Length: 157
Image (cartoon, rainbow, N blue to C red; front, side, top):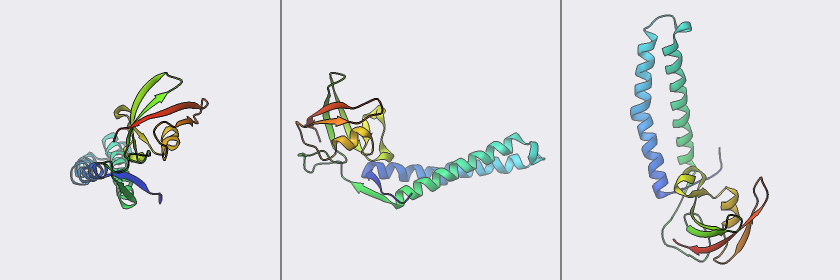
């Protein structure tokens, strides 16, 4: 994973907090569970030991992934700046012609994407179609089920 990871300052702080929690709290707890499970005896038939070992691998993998993301992170500003075109961090109001409804999304880096918070990735089909476009432009989003059109109504912030 040598490609850039785009993060807002808030996103970077959240990742750093998660990393700190994993390293300082979760991993030591799992290591302690592993130590206790090891004392139960025969490791080949010890379900607690196997579960703790799997959990340690998961936590270690997550720590490694976050460290790598932070190493290659490019921080972008979601505040202010030019509102003439859609860029990372911008919140935009669009009109979806197929659904015949408006929606508001923030374009964020992949690591921060969360559809439940209306944060869409710059690498998603919608994100790629919108980046660099201006208010009033209609773009075609190429999706697996076929293309559809959206119009940029406003760049909110």
